[in-house]
Length: 102
Image 1 (cartoon, helix red, strand yellow):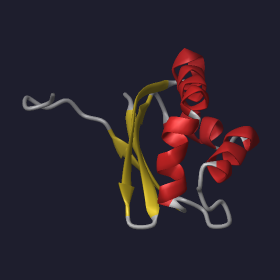
Image 2 (spheres, one colour):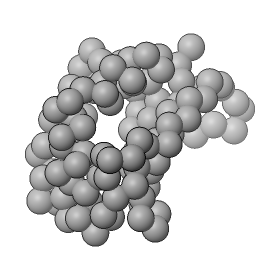
Image 3 (cartoon, one colour):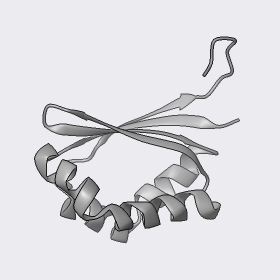
Image 4 (tube, helix red, strand yellow):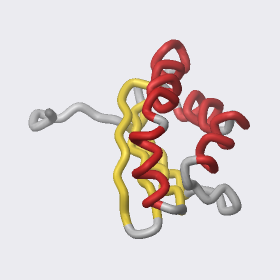
């Protein structure tokens, strides 16, 4: 059974938007590490007022925590505008199948 993870990270969203283009190769490398054995199944970002929302599906919550807690990833989060002085709001949800899923 997989899990859906939402993580709300406070920070500089303008800096984050620029980083999506300026540091696209680094984002791609991180995605490859996540998919390549770390347990990530799906990934998406959203931007709100003063925060970035991460919406992921992982094989397990433990795999997400291990990946997201990596010091090098946390350094990248800070470098692209994330405020690492406050913990993100992380919620774990059981992923379920539904007839209207797409």
